[in-house]
Image 1 (cartoon, rainbow, N blue to C red):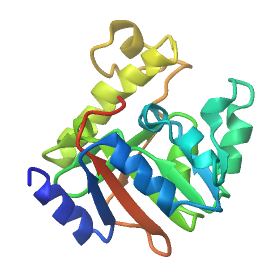
Image 2: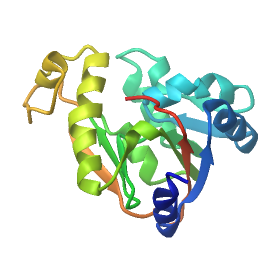
Image 3: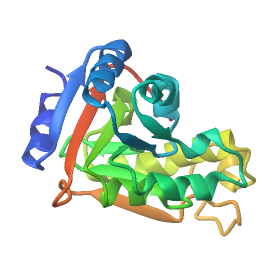
Amino acid sequence: MKYDRLIRNLEKNRYKVSYFQDAKEATKYLEQEIQGVTVGFGDSETLSVLNLQRILAKNNTAIDPSTGDKDTFVEIGKKTLTTEVFLTSVNGVAETGEMVNIDGTGNRVAGSIFGHRKVYFIFGTNKIESTLDQAIWRARNIAAPQNAKRLGLKTPCAIKGDRCYECDSEDRICNTMNIHLKKMNNTRAEVIIINKPLGL
């Protein structure tokens, strides 16, 4: 399979990996796996496109900061850090098994690291790069500018839309970058790969 190397290296890094040919298969699997718990969402276009907040809210208590406004985002984001399960995506993933996320507020990165019974990393094939350097480049020069533009921010990358400018803008969303080298200790973590482009 095309993604054998990535899956093998993620498993070597202690993640459970589930691969799905389409989004419908993946969401059905997650709906069956996640029931009767509190679920937190990292701010993610991939999760929004998959409509997971609505799907998982049927059998769980779902907490998603993207459902609020600018004034409530931080307070809702804090609540996601204490949920039993946390869902997020990644800005880039290397075939060598590392996952990369850039964050402006910190709720997404923080939620993926500590405090949950289980964390799911969910992404499509557009996030996959050959090396860690390329995954970092993607996170900084593709995902971050597109996210800044989506949010209507006045950063050089959002206005020009082509790359990171290492800006000092107050709207900057590239305030921290996290590289998951291996699964965190004391947390179950599963990677969900969907065989289609998803998110930014």
